[in-house]
Image 1 (spheres, rainbow, N blue to C red):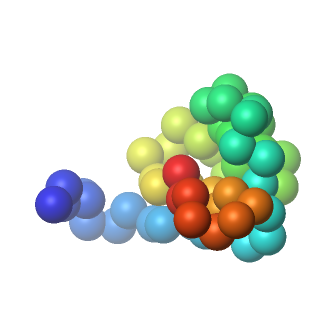
Image 2: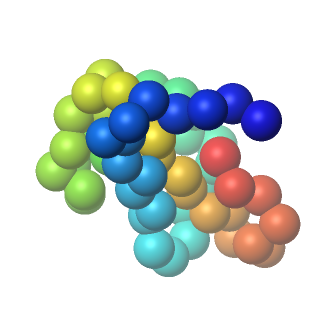
Length: 55
């Protein structure tokens, strides 16, 4: 298990996310939808359509 630094937040994007966006697209989604800096050191999790994939 990887220990996260103290104060790290975990952001979960509710709803279905198109995982074909790639890392750049998911970073843009975090910036626009969640209004957070994707390079802040926090953890962002996105759910795929079937629910079996979380990135």
